[in-house]
Amino acid sequence: MRNLLILAMNTLKITFRKKSNIIVYLILPVVIIIFVMTAYGSSSSKINIGINNKDINGALAKDFIEEIKNQDRYRVRMVEEKEINKLVADSSVECVLTIPENFDESIYNNNFSKLDIFTIKGEDATGFIQSYVNYYIKNLLSLSKASDNNKDSFNKLYVGFKTETLKLSTNLVKDQSLNKRVAIASIGFLIMFMLQGASTTAGLILKEKRERTYFRIFSSPVDSKIYIGANILANMFMMLIQSILVIVSMKYIFNFNMGVPGLQLLVILVTFGLVCVTLGIFIVAFSSTSYQASTMATIIFVPTCMISGCYWPKELMPDFMQKIANFLPQTWALEAIKQLQEGKTFIDVIPCLAILIAFALSFFLIGMYKMKISSNVKNFI
Image (cartoon, rainbow, N blue to C red):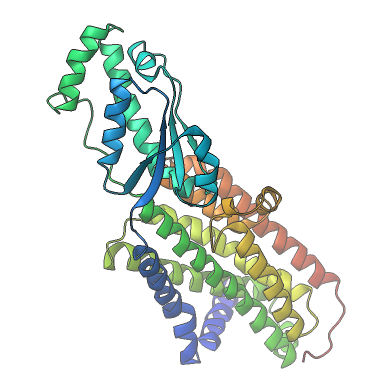
């Protein structure tokens, strides 16, 4: 244990001997995320949505449309059914909400099923409107149930509902959809920086191999497992500090609501950090030169971050690429965060964390096995 801690401390000293590394590993991620938050925040103008009302004579349907129009976040446009595909395709509207025929009657009879929302932009475009629709319809169905499906009784209760003299629930949920999108985008860029940290693991080991320090260490009583463990420990410490700085900056300095409890987000990021560090070991094991390691890291990091949704919502990509994304660790880190934003408990995201740990174990075991069987001890260039 003593040797493990000594080697880990030595790794940290070597890394931060250059003052520029403090900026690169600790300060730059925070600066980039602030930039992302600012860029997204400046694009928070009203979103255009279309409404196709098939229950033209329905009083409840008309009131529902007026309530949506009263939401500050949206600019509402009434559309015909034949226009829907064209308007969504050319981005004239982000999505179209279709109110079905007999909407009023289905509410009165307490047998309403759902409203259709059509979009090509995924949950980013429909997240809040879907939440608001669910909230509003749930209240109407509560009125219907309370009135025992009696239309006259319903109308009396509905008057109270409209004038807010009858309190069915707590205050309306505040629109947090923009904050959630900004949080995902920010964490996506942090994930990119954490993956770059995997290059640190690879770079240090390759540097010590090139300078023959690597082999002098193994000629001492230090076991190879202790050496690799020290590198993992040092890099995990750096990623822990990096994650804490980002979370504290977003939550407490900029008062930004990420929609995820800070401690739970930290657990997800630290788990992903373990994936990054073991990926660095994997890269070292399959690289015979520093140039190869750098090239392999670039080939792995950039495309996988794109496909998994770190730079933009993966829903914007073709179906086959979304399926490929399921085999990437970044996808499961972001998925865990999204599930927490949707109100799920931490227990619900444990499968996502288990998948991340499986990735980490796979990278680690493959990397260690390759190192063990490799007899190549030539100098690195």
